Image 1 (spheres, rainbow, N blue to C red):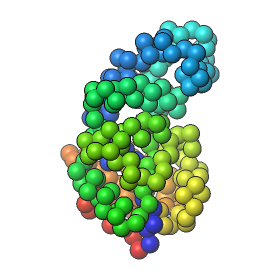
Image 2 (image 1 turned 90 degrees about the horizontal axis):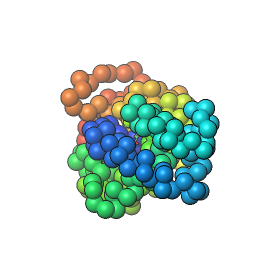
Image 3 (image 1 turned 120 degrees about the vertical axis):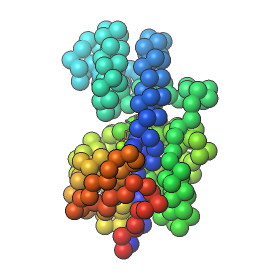
Length: 228
Ligand SMILES: CSCCC(=O)C(=O)COP(=O)(O)O
Ligand SMILES: [Mg+2]
């Protein structure tokens, strides 16, 4: 019986377009000045040290660090330090009403129904935990943070590695076979299935649904079956 559901965000609860056409361009526009103005802030410094280490750059060369971050945004790299900095920048945009995060109506209805049934809901996204809370806090569906018991990001581990899902299962504290993981990315689902979780492959229109031996395939949350 499923007692907990862990969901991805981009391409699963919410559209890829919102992330790529609203959030990423906003981050690319605001991030350079944000970094110039916030050098010295602890969270920014920790992230920039990671950027410098990963890219082999001088930690003091602010402009080169900014150029690296902009390149990673353009390439949609799921680098933890970039995701931390994006979360800090998006905070400003959400709070100033520049945008609200998208959610598919079927995802909203089903998340509310599962929550009302007593199923514990969790998020696992490449976006930082701060960015995830903003995403569901400033959402077209209202403040949806009450739906989620906890959030996981890539500080737990990469989304395509089974070990990350084992750590999430340990943190949730129930058997893997009682957890359902939802994602649009088959490599993430393969990793979750390797860790013993049930999985559902959410393939949003206009995708033609591919079937998979291990994963339930759906194009809407309305069609997700909870395994016994
Ligand atoms: C929730 S923050 C915005 C989305 C984001 O930055 C991202 O990388 C989404 O990746 P996901 O793992 O949700 O597909
Ligand atoms: Mg996704």
